[in-house]
Image 1 (cartoon, rainbow, N blue to C red):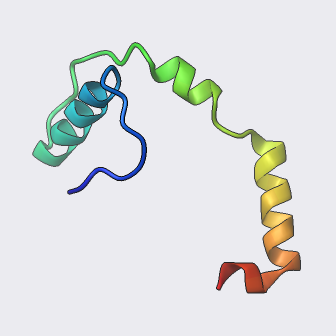
Image 2 (cartoon, one colour):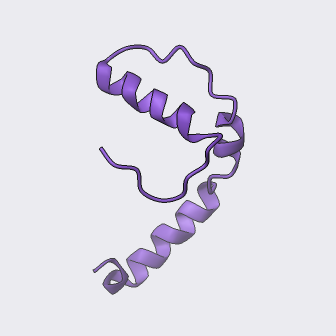
Length: 63
């Protein structure tokens, strides 16, 4: 396992704990205080539909 991308000293411990719990097959008992913020920053259905349409219209973008 490797970490790729940004690094947040405040958030990485929560992500790492969740990953390790999943790999160990145990319930993650630590509540992630940042999860609502992270979820709110994800693109919505409109963006996903536009992205899918663009990729279908320009299949060479996926290569």
